Image (cartoon, rainbow, N blue to C red; front, side, top):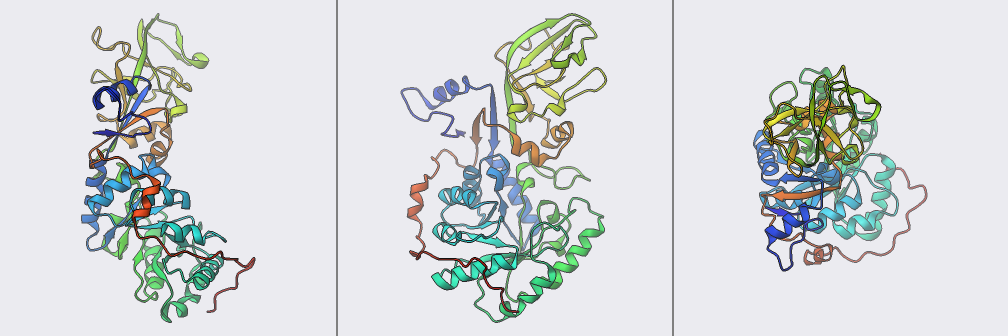
Length: 425
């Protein structure tokens, strides 16, 4: 087991274990990320999608799990392609993994070409203007790092329209186009019987077939489980890697990745009829013992999981038993009812489990009134973060060490036109 060096000291006169224990004492909660579980999830998805390549979406700091740590672990496991949302995210991932292909989903903007070239990553282009701007940069500098083309087949968010995509087919067929991937995004992949899936598949299959020699990608996490027709040449799972159920109509095939524990800061007794928390919305129906835990909505434990006199909220595990939240969740604290625990089973300083030991990301999402994606990406930075598995005992690669990789050629300053020309059809 290793810990994020930004939070846990790794050197000093004490042993690593003593340093870690001392550091954890300064935090109210401990967020543990199981990198071996992420690797196991990736391998399961890879096996499900054979012979397609299995990439990994690690945007939003790998859904809150740590993009640098996750990318290094998955790269060692054999993952060769990663997707992020922004160039800044790509820069951090490139510092951790010098070799894999990195696609940036946010697209291409004027004067960003040198940023892509410097770290050798590829834009996902979703508009003809973007494509023209990228084309100008490549022609003027000789950069040939590649790019993906995103085609909209029904999301109505990002992507070329089908007619715009059709218009650039002559360019693709002419060769030397620099397009390394054609992709689209499913609207309702988690709904097995949604008619939208079939419509998108038909539209994408038709247009992708005209991108001669260019690999195609359609399936996200849930899309992988729609079957081989959706898998094409590459699949790009995201949330499933981190334990979110990609098949909500069936049991979760993924391993749990994140464990969250928080410290009990006080044990107190309240009499029958007393209220607990802001607004006095929860009333003790018996003499009640409470444990107050040092986590709140500022840490990503949503206020929506509160309880009141008419509604039961989320549960927390203490001494192996589920205990209900009592009253409103506040910014820094949660009160839970531990009356039914044996005497002295919970004490000040003990840790309670908010996520893990049977409490899944999807269960917590239900109490939060949201989806697992938001639960993971909302987990705060006031936790001590601990990583286990994935050979993380080695220190993270520092940004300056990226120079060890083959550097891209020095590129001249490029003046992009204010209104780049439309590409010829």
